[in-house]
Length: 158
Image (cartoon, rainbow, N blue to C red; front, side):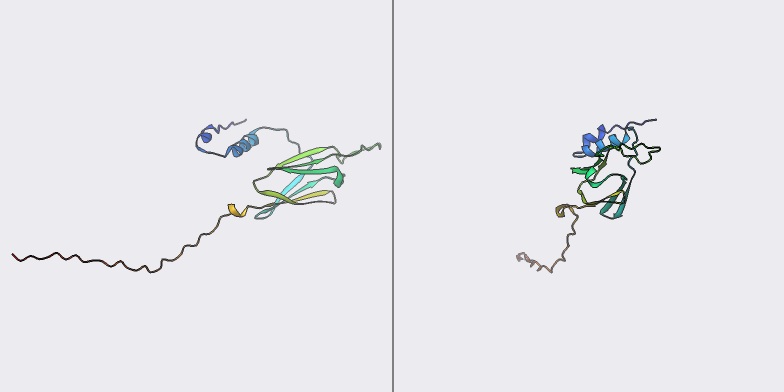
């Protein structure tokens, strides 16, 4: 059962959230599940993340990684086909392309291939101008009192 959400009421009262609504619509669409190569996504601390992909059989020159705006694309292309006769082939060597949607200001800081695992470290780096800043509230200095003038009415004797 599929439930379609209508975001049109939000478009009338919000500006600049088009990308968020597009992400929600794309997430609700049913897509074929491709679970190869397997991967993990971990949050290592408040602003750091790690993606670990199992890419057994691929060398560093057969893997490519690109980051464009808020999208990280990891792909693998085997350079040559093995001509050996296999009795059983359990290690997948097919080409792949895996995309990860990244939040604003998330950048790849490191990528390494070790023991068949591709590890990608990511860091959210919010620009200084966008970080919340604390504004100090100063104390009120004693302000001089304004001298009050007393207006005396002339008294007339009748």
